[in-house]
Image (tube, rainbow, N blue to C red):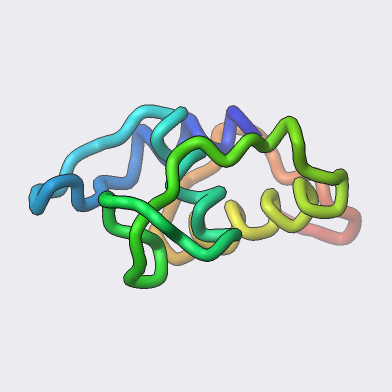
Length: 94
């Protein structure tokens, strides 16, 4: 998860206080985990809402984390992220 968040943080600019800028791995974690929830904060959310910082991934189930990883892949594909680690999915050809 953190390698994926690092890739996103290095490649995707996001609107912060009205300006496009790069965010830290941690800020992306907060933004993307909020995208899995019903977003609740000041920063622009993934689907037009607001970001709720502080969702704890350590408190989520394995199923939620698996869905979150899939969500990261989907977000990355939408934003042309090149993953630094190979995707290890049976049948996936790179």
